[in-house]
Length: 584
Image 1 (cartoon, rainbow, N blue to C red):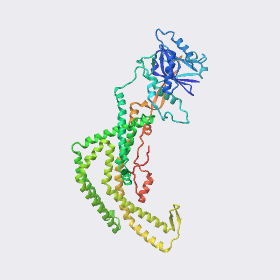
Image 2: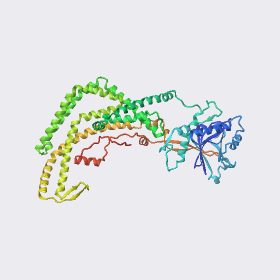
Image 3: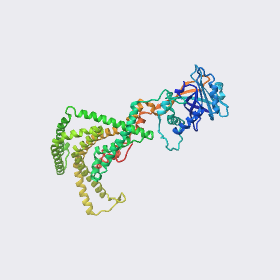
Image 4: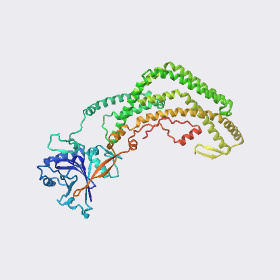
């Protein structure tokens, strides 16, 4: 049998007294949490531990005695050993140090007074290999502040029993009220623990804590006003909902509203994951605002808004001219291909008319572009994500004619593809059964076969012209979608990046623990084996995977194979469309 005693490093030089801790149920292990110094009154010790048990929900008991050599306390060892009758335990630990030795002498006494283990007498005896004592030293502050992964929140039901190591971490974390009493407090008891030299405090942190509650209440009230405004019936009409679902700015504002409701809630985070989620959202929001203010300072300096407005109209004219030249090239003999001249001229003139309308619209709006950009630039004060969302909407509006070209070409191409596939089944004596969703046999008469052959020939010879227009406009649309996709990925990255968790991993790696490692600290004759428990920090990839904020992704729902199939048959694709469900 191996008895494991987890002993805090801060108690290595503590004065003689009683060991306060917890026996881990189901395991032959004990966790030492503090040392109560002599002098003390046993009744006061029992009362103090009972009060702590009601606060921490941890069965805190006196595990044994601790002896530290000191002048004037020569008979302290025998006095502390006799206290086992006042604090009855199944096993009474007797730890002591000797001058000139790093290791501790440990004895374990049963409740009947029988000595179960004496390392000094049994050292080197092979028959005692079954009964050993291992002292595991740990940094109490790091263990208390760290969170062992995978996370198991308090109160979470699980059929698997928690491991011994997880129970040790939970015991130290839940015993935090025990560490509030330090040597500067006036009281009948004096303790030694990681905070015994004085509690850590910060005036700025305390002021922020006091000010956070009224600020959160005020911001929650503002959010309630925003929800009241959004509850107007006119905003829930189908056209308004459809337009708002397509605008990236509206989607981002709704997403930030949910974030604010989570962060500025006056309720304290109940679990570790909820706290990390709030912290990550708050830090990402501060980063978003800081980047937005930097963008504003750059835009409104050196009259860059006017320069941008003066550049926008010539760029739009240049794009319109390039599209016009592209259509004139397609209306001729592109790459030496022989096209259907009549259909080619009809499609070319139809698309040229759209370009003319769009150019007229841009020139009509040119006197107001600078003022529009000036007010749009102010949206960056709400964060860089809002500015990027507005930029995405502006790109969508400026390239609306390209979207129209793509839709016209895709619909015409899709109609011909489905017509050819249906007529091809007619030649083979087949038809598509809509009810059963399968291809069945069918007999056709001579007139149906003649009309089908005629239509098939017409569609087949017109397909290259339609396919060429569809190919060109699809490539143009994909370039716009790619640019918008980069913007959406940037917004998603800012919204979901676990910046606070990464900062914890870099600055305080022990806060996010993946496990522990042990190294031999001391192995002297006459003393038990001393091990040092060190915390293994969580990997950065695991931190990002575990604490990434759920967000509305802009990735396509379909796989790449399904996307290519849709492009081939001419179905409309929406890879820029926001998902309606949350993904992690």
